[in-house]
Length: 145
Image (cartoon, rainbow, N blue to C red; front, top):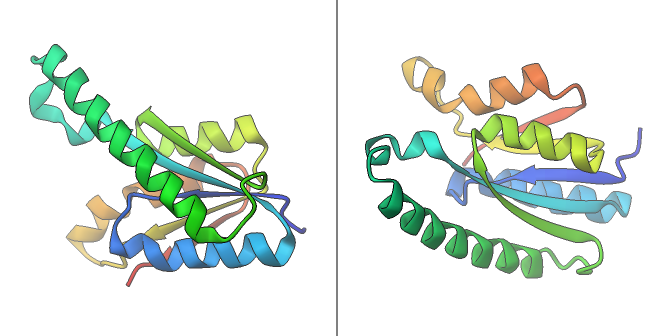
Protein backbone atom coordinates (compact mmCIF):
# COMPACT_ATOMS: atom_id res chain seq x y z
CA UNK A 1 0.00 0.00 0.00
CA UNK A 2 1.32 3.42 -0.97
CA UNK A 3 0.01 6.10 1.41
CA UNK A 4 -1.68 9.05 -0.25
CA UNK A 5 -2.55 10.83 3.01
CA UNK A 6 -0.28 10.74 6.03
CA UNK A 7 -1.45 12.04 9.40
CA UNK A 8 1.28 13.20 11.77
CA UNK A 9 0.34 14.10 15.34
CA UNK A 10 2.64 16.35 17.34
CA UNK A 11 2.89 17.61 20.89
CA UNK A 12 5.73 19.95 19.79
CA UNK A 13 8.20 18.16 22.06
CA UNK A 14 11.74 17.15 21.14
CA UNK A 15 10.53 13.55 21.31
CA UNK A 16 8.22 14.14 18.36
CA UNK A 17 11.05 15.36 16.09
CA UNK A 18 12.17 11.93 14.78
CA UNK A 19 8.55 11.11 13.89
CA UNK A 20 8.16 14.52 12.23
CA UNK A 21 11.26 13.98 10.08
CA UNK A 22 10.01 10.54 9.05
CA UNK A 23 6.53 11.89 8.23
CA UNK A 24 8.06 14.53 5.93
CA UNK A 25 10.33 11.93 4.28
CA UNK A 26 7.39 9.59 3.66
CA UNK A 27 5.21 12.40 2.31
CA UNK A 28 7.95 13.42 -0.11
CA UNK A 29 8.85 9.87 -1.15
CA UNK A 30 5.24 8.85 -1.79
CA UNK A 31 4.03 12.26 -3.04
CA UNK A 32 1.46 12.06 -0.27
CA UNK A 33 -0.64 14.76 1.33
CA UNK A 34 0.65 15.54 4.83
CA UNK A 35 -1.82 16.28 7.61
CA UNK A 36 -0.28 17.80 10.76
CA UNK A 37 -2.35 17.63 13.94
CA UNK A 38 -1.88 19.08 17.41
CA UNK A 39 -4.45 18.31 20.09
CA UNK A 40 -5.01 20.50 23.12
CA UNK A 41 -6.07 17.85 25.59
CA UNK A 42 -8.48 18.99 28.31
CA UNK A 43 -6.96 16.31 30.54
CA UNK A 44 -3.84 18.49 30.69
CA UNK A 45 -5.83 21.19 32.53
CA UNK A 46 -7.56 19.29 35.37
CA UNK A 47 -7.32 22.07 37.95
CA UNK A 48 -9.16 24.57 35.76
CA UNK A 49 -12.50 22.78 35.57
CA UNK A 50 -14.16 25.28 37.92
CA UNK A 51 -12.67 28.28 36.15
CA UNK A 52 -14.46 27.94 32.83
CA UNK A 53 -13.96 31.53 31.63
CA UNK A 54 -10.27 31.60 32.52
CA UNK A 55 -9.84 28.17 30.92
CA UNK A 56 -11.37 29.42 27.65
CA UNK A 57 -8.91 32.32 27.65
CA UNK A 58 -5.95 30.04 28.37
CA UNK A 59 -7.03 27.54 25.71
CA UNK A 60 -7.49 30.37 23.21
CA UNK A 61 -3.90 31.46 23.81
CA UNK A 62 -2.65 27.88 23.60
CA UNK A 63 -4.56 27.33 20.35
CA UNK A 64 -3.13 30.51 18.78
CA UNK A 65 0.39 29.46 19.71
CA UNK A 66 -0.23 25.92 18.46
CA UNK A 67 -1.53 27.19 15.12
CA UNK A 68 1.56 29.38 14.72
CA UNK A 69 3.80 26.40 15.41
CA UNK A 70 1.82 24.22 12.98
CA UNK A 71 2.20 26.83 10.25
CA UNK A 72 5.93 26.95 10.96
CA UNK A 73 6.15 23.16 10.68
CA UNK A 74 4.28 23.32 7.39
CA UNK A 75 6.83 25.78 6.00
CA UNK A 76 9.75 23.71 7.34
CA UNK A 77 8.44 20.57 5.64
CA UNK A 78 9.36 21.91 2.21
CA UNK A 79 6.08 20.51 0.92
CA UNK A 80 3.78 22.55 -1.25
CA UNK A 81 1.07 24.24 0.81
CA UNK A 82 -1.38 22.40 -1.43
CA UNK A 83 -0.15 19.09 -0.02
CA UNK A 84 -0.01 20.06 3.66
CA UNK A 85 -2.93 20.75 5.98
CA UNK A 86 -2.69 21.74 9.62
CA UNK A 87 -5.22 21.06 12.34
CA UNK A 88 -5.44 22.19 15.95
CA UNK A 89 -8.20 20.50 17.92
CA UNK A 90 -9.30 20.28 21.51
CA UNK A 91 -10.39 17.06 23.17
CA UNK A 92 -8.88 13.75 24.16
CA UNK A 93 -5.72 13.31 22.10
CA UNK A 94 -6.12 9.75 20.87
CA UNK A 95 -9.80 10.28 20.02
CA UNK A 96 -9.02 13.38 17.97
CA UNK A 97 -6.22 11.57 16.12
CA UNK A 98 -8.54 8.70 15.22
CA UNK A 99 -11.40 11.07 14.35
CA UNK A 100 -9.26 13.16 11.96
CA UNK A 101 -7.80 10.02 10.38
CA UNK A 102 -11.34 8.86 9.63
CA UNK A 103 -12.57 12.27 8.43
CA UNK A 104 -9.62 12.72 6.07
CA UNK A 105 -9.32 9.02 5.10
CA UNK A 106 -5.67 9.00 6.14
CA UNK A 107 -3.79 5.94 4.91
CA UNK A 108 -1.12 6.11 7.62
CA UNK A 109 -0.80 7.67 11.07
CA UNK A 110 2.69 8.59 12.29
CA UNK A 111 3.34 9.64 15.86
CA UNK A 112 6.22 9.71 18.26
CA UNK A 113 6.54 8.12 21.64
CA UNK A 114 8.71 9.08 24.55
CA UNK A 115 10.56 5.78 24.49
CA UNK A 116 10.24 5.20 28.21
CA UNK A 117 9.62 1.96 30.00
CA UNK A 118 8.13 0.92 33.30
CA UNK A 119 5.71 3.19 35.16
CA UNK A 120 6.54 6.23 33.00
CA UNK A 121 5.60 4.23 29.90
CA UNK A 122 2.15 3.56 31.35
CA UNK A 123 1.47 7.29 31.45
CA UNK A 124 3.48 8.61 28.49
CA UNK A 125 2.70 5.77 26.09
CA UNK A 126 -1.04 5.79 26.62
CA UNK A 127 -1.82 7.95 23.55
CA UNK A 128 0.19 5.73 21.22
CA UNK A 129 -1.38 2.57 22.66
CA UNK A 130 -4.89 4.00 22.39
CA UNK A 131 -4.37 5.10 18.78
CA UNK A 132 -3.02 1.64 17.92
CA UNK A 133 -6.07 -0.02 19.46
CA UNK A 134 -8.72 2.20 17.90
CA UNK A 135 -7.46 3.62 14.59
CA UNK A 136 -8.34 0.71 12.25
CA UNK A 137 -5.58 1.77 9.87
CA UNK A 138 -1.77 1.49 9.82
CA UNK A 139 0.00 3.34 12.62
CA UNK A 140 3.74 3.95 12.67
CA UNK A 141 5.14 4.79 16.10
CA UNK A 142 8.60 6.33 16.15
CA UNK A 143 10.67 6.34 19.33
CA UNK A 144 11.58 9.81 20.49
CA UNK A 145 15.06 11.21 20.93
